[in-house]
Length: 163
Image (cartoon, rainbow, N blue to C red):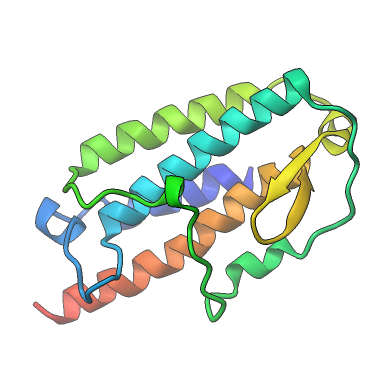
């Protein structure tokens, strides 16, 4: 599964960072790697929750294909919704990994046993791409994390070159 592969790459990429590096801000207004990881947790947790609500209460609302592959285009800056913005509070890698493992377990659980037909019939809106079906949301999570993996790579490279 693409989502799990990307998550594993993220974990491998940050495993050698200490807490100072993890929480370092290279530029004012730019997220630290810890904040990016916290954002990924907040996103996945929020999406899993909304998928669960939609599966229980949603009415059939099929949608068309969305260009959410544009998520990978980092020249397009997208502001995170306020409830998906991480705090300034420093966090340890262990803390962040625990959160991400919890959100992934919830995400997997909410999709377990669901058919593609069921997932493509129910949808809820994305702030940029509009109405997306639950299958599209499942794919979006991996692309969103892939986008932020590239951001993490850039920050880590800059941290290493500052040493």
